[in-house]
Length: 454
Image: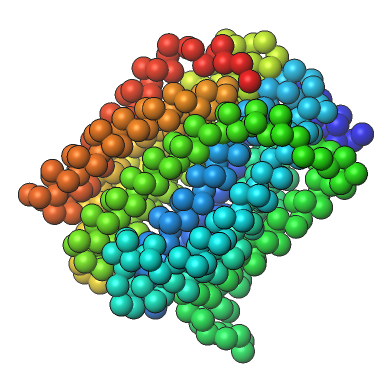
């Protein structure tokens, strides 16, 4: 009963009162959670960086491959969040619980093929990306461990996203914080073999990640099934509901396809970068980690916008839903202005934190500077796309992403790389970022997402 009353209070707060306060109420805990997660990613890369360029390249290539797993996770999550938020806004609480249960079933089923493919085909997959020699052997051990623990990626993200869709942002933040701290503790133990632990190097990084995520998943499941959250799940009522799964999938499939487009593009880019050697791959991997840290507040603000859109549309308040999105986007633009200035000035200094090899510092610094110049447009595409997803419109962002990446980015990168090598690659990425931001803004202002039925 306490959890359900919390839902009702949250619903009234998010569909009434100050929009700016509501945006920050949702976004700040998510920022803290993602900050903790990215703190681990940075620390992890620093630890791995001490093992040498081959280790960095192996983890970077796996980072791109792990993005493929996130395609399925994100699809389930987007469909679930849109439906949970809409049902909570309309005060249809039992249906919100049912959506959460079916999303768990979908996550468990989805992890099975990921485990089989990743474990048995690790070598061929990495070779397709251009991995050779030491990079290949290190990458195989990393990918097999992560694939075996793929369910620990699905369950925490799906359950956390479901709670955020219901307006509970603090529970996922606390669990993510705990799991991240555990990850940071386990990382040096398994990577370097401190305190009598086996020294597993790159494979130890993967094992630390799987174990910490698994602990977080168990805690979240306990909270959901013990009635301690805003959503109430019960094993006695746990039944497969194919009709509800289909409704989640109809919304989520285009979100998954959007992630597929992103990750296929990333795989192609990684293959192009690999042509220029291990130093280029390592620099690209470091640069992506740094850029992701800057994108972190945007993901939080975008998710808050998605939740507010879903709940306000459920409460029949479309104008308030739109105002919520623009406020979230405006707040992120303020953050991006400062981030742009810092990264342009200190790009090479930041790269040197991870690795002091001069060529890696030079290439990585150039990458960060090019991308930072497009932050303003990236902010628009991140927030507005996720807001449309929150309304259940996942098709439009998918189409826009496809146009930006495969009609603009990849051809432009291939063309510019012929003359400017890695600098041409960074320039092509930057131009496509600008285009995606402009196209997304144009489509969002047309307002068709307000009338999306789920």
